[in-house]
Length: 145
Image 1 (cartoon, rainbow, N blue to C red):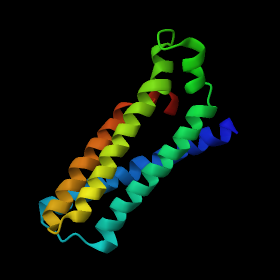
Image 2 (image 1 turned 45 degrees about the horizontal axis):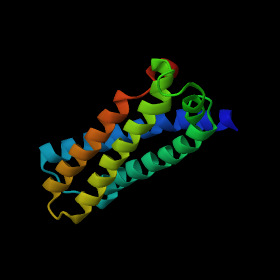
Image 3 (image 1 turned 30 degrees about the vertical axis):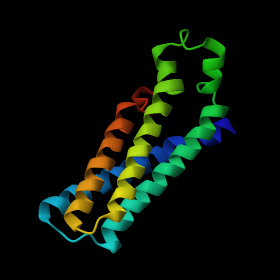
């Protein structure tokens, strides 16, 4: 079970990063070009990024509790006994990614209340951008490549 969830979490991460980058780039280009915020493109990209990010979080939470490098590592070694690589997986990666999802969710909620396309693009660009930067800052890059 652990291997299946781990594989799903790893491959889904690529899709989440791709759609988040697409959402941020789309919002920045819409802001610069002063385009209209369309339901067919901009709304759906942002919504898809939100949904995929939350699915990734749910898979990550399950993985956290079934993985030997998650909650089990904290129980076994304690906070002071973990190596930096193990601390990244057991503490930093989950905590920062939850914060990133909070930013993405706030961006989604705030943009829905706005009427002007310029402000919608700006809100998505800022909040999704902050979420993307936070996610990129705590990825276990050594395990990905």
